[in-house]
Length: 239
View 1 (cartoon, rainbow, N blue to C red):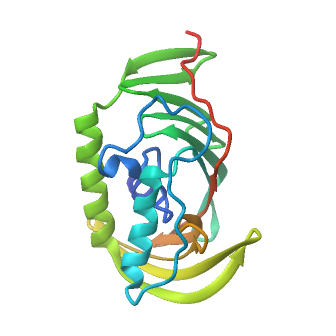
View 2 (cartoon, one colour):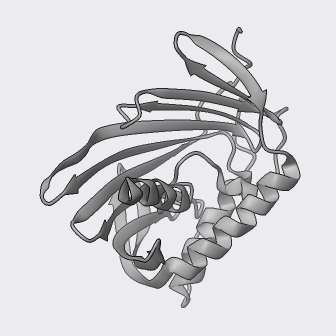
């Protein structure tokens, strides 16, 4: 159980970053720059062409920080895990739609704990379970900012190397590819990982990330795709 829990924590660290995640937005880094009034329509980001610099780590970090103004966007992550070469977690898919920094809708299908659906609007969180929606208090703006800062610090700590690879095209979008390595210690166990991320040339936003994280004989794979300028509306569910 400890290994699986740690990997959920790892996913939370890496997935909302284009390197992986488990339910929170990088916009939490500074509380986000768009309010819940932005529930659909065009992206709030200013489009600026991107060219790689001499600092690959900075390039990747800047791309992730651009998510703060990229609303609306959709994040789709497909993940699976093996232990001793055998299936430890069947393939599952988590789709999170961000209409604004404080307005999102997440559906996780095929997860080890069963399907999960959650809507967050401002400081309210709505979860679907047992055929009905329930409402609960969500994190405040101050809490989201605190978690975002902790997230950013942890991500910087575990990212050991980022290397620029060159131009590549992903899903028809001209991008620049970067490779990264990850290393950390949790619960007395050593975790190592490798991955590859693509940043769009047209706007400098992350487009895709593929990664694998290992501890002992357990391996967790993630494939993450970003979609922008999508029609997203996140509304309070009927309770």
